[in-house]
Length: 280
Image 1 (tube, one colour):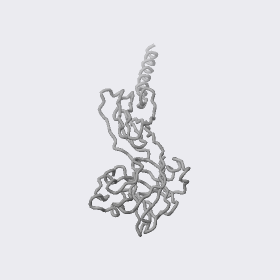
Image 2 (spheres, rainbow, N blue to C red; image 1 turned 90 degrees about the vertical axis):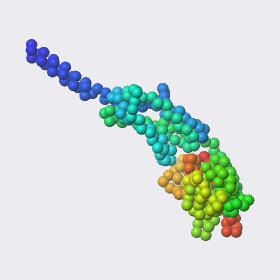
Image 3 (cartoon, helix red, strand yellow; image 1 turned 180 degrees about the vertical axis):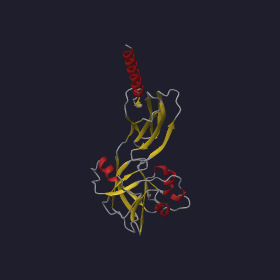
Image 4 (cartoon, rainbow, N blue to C red; image 1 turned 120 degrees about the vertical axis):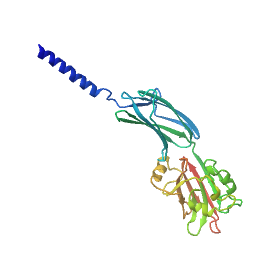
């Protein structure tokens, strides 16, 4: 009888040990709002409130937020290590001034160092635009502007470009070394070429980095996926030696993609350039 009782006790101890070993075996669970919808869309420049709910059976040790643009650019992260309720964490994250598709990455780690990651995608509702036969001139302060703003869909003279520098995406010039060239304001060559004591790029505090790559795509029919693929791990902040009918894929600093087509390159050392610009 005693042996039987001892056996029962041993089994209970083993079961208790087994249960303790398997207690709280679930890693943190991350959801977005009540329905766990993992993406939404906003107008360009808008904002989005994202409700993050995290449940952790073994109590939370750390929660990290990381924002990144779809093109891979990371935005500084935020770490949380103190919780009023370490088993259930709720917080509303506000994403502001969204100018390109952005991903909110949430990472939760519990006291047993088990980590769960979830992502929320915010897309921007972009409205495709197309402008034909834009005339750019390489004469910085004269009647023809050398700068172009995708956001404003407008050619700008250099004084106007400085005023709207946060919106300037590319600048046209001609040089013996580079030929007919389109460059981002952030490119070092733009600072040298557009060097004016009052309005020159060297006086700007905001110089956008636009990426360019020459492509063998049809300007009128290429899709967003065609352009994105062409830009993957390719391109630079300047595209030079342009010829008539060259097509260039671009991506602005805000993430806007599109195509420009060069044509009707003017005489007199290519002092003018006609382009068509199509955004998607």
